[in-house]
Image 1: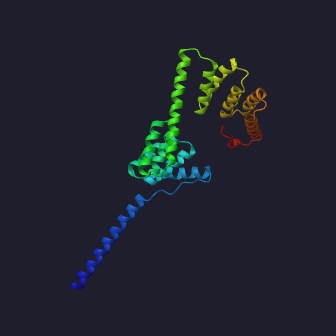
Image 2: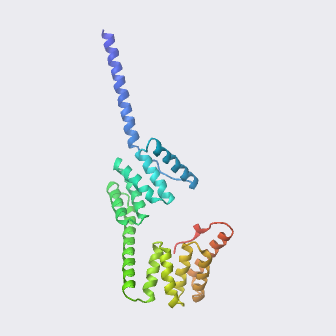
Image 3: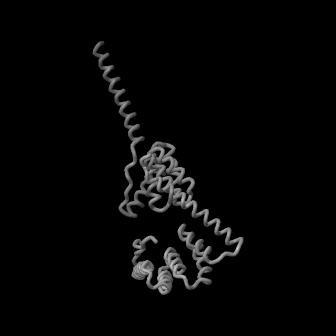
Length: 261
């Protein structure tokens, strides 16, 4: 009788231990932080997206996998697809600051700047050491000011006649937010009355480069340089554009080497 009691106690302890271990394992799995995501190329990136999308369609994603898939979408240039996954990850694991960092970036890349700032503020509250987010928030606020200035200029140009300078400013702001076709339209109006400005032709060259027309970009940059032949910055830009145009004609894509203005 005593032996049976001891066996029962041992078995009960073993079962309780097993239950506790299973519970702990589940807890640890649920709360494990996602591994850093670093892809070596588009093939690996797209492969991970296909794998995670397949999991999503079959058994569903853990919050860690939702985060990982969202980061992959952002890196692929699809921030809109990342947002619902990051919101889901944040709902299930609200204490992970990286989710809010990535959510802010997804919103930022869609120019949803109020939401980007809100997400980065949350990330900073969770992790005050993420100082770089203060810089991102400042960038978002500066971008908000750019959009406000664009709206003011658009209204001013609609309601009252203005000189070429305002149109040129608007074109430059359009280029800054990648509204290339709008910039081209304004620059066409500007150059019709201001044919002697190297800055105007330099801006036209940039607009053509952003739209992928490097032949026209080279042509416009040459016009800018003819008007200001001693300008070393224009010489450098022309050299870069000629290199890219040569690469395109040879069937290569050299745009990665274009420097920021």
